[in-house]
Length: 266
Image 1 (cartoon, rainbow, N blue to C red):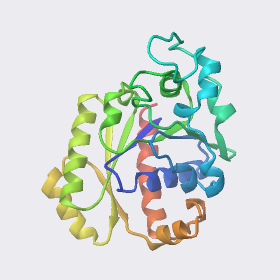
Image 2: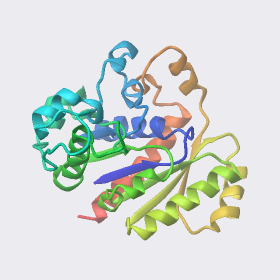
Image 3: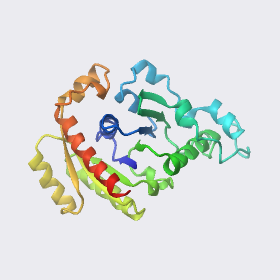
Image 4: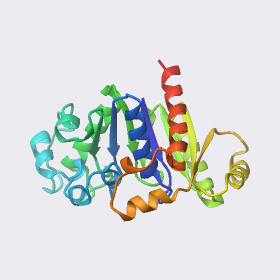
């Protein structure tokens, strides 16, 4: 099962991605988390200490690895020849960060234009890895993607079984979510779920949802939880959040919906 977590910036994609990874792994599933943001911070949310997270080199910026795998050094300029099909099937195991026995993280980074604006070897490596992951990996893959609609232009979105679109309970945020969901439908992503995050008033959030979507998309309410802020201020990951907290319970309910879709698709 491949889950794309999308939405505009600041809506809480990384928080929900991290909690989903923890909850699904606690239920016994093997989970591979991928951070494809240009400013990746999923590692910290998964409990990697801040100092260690700063030292992580995303695949899309790992020039040494790119040179080994593609045969060319990034930054050489236009006209350099390199492999567009580098070996990538071992990257998750060799370069992934082991969070738990059944939960691993790979920081991919953004795979948009680099350096001189061309497809450089490090970007080619990252894209090849993502495509391999979408097609060949057997575990649950959760992708915390770049804010906005960029992911839909990468030729990867159609590889997902589920798009989880995260939004805040405001008219503007919900309208952006609607645009993203419309784009996902054009790519035939079979299952779309809206996660309305940071909700203070569930009734009001439901009213706002109906104004924008008219009941056409299934949605889950994720309540605003001060535990998120407290952990963030202490530099702790979401593995430390109490299981009795509102956000944990709400994302657990969301995970049950994803698992139901996974079972139906077998």
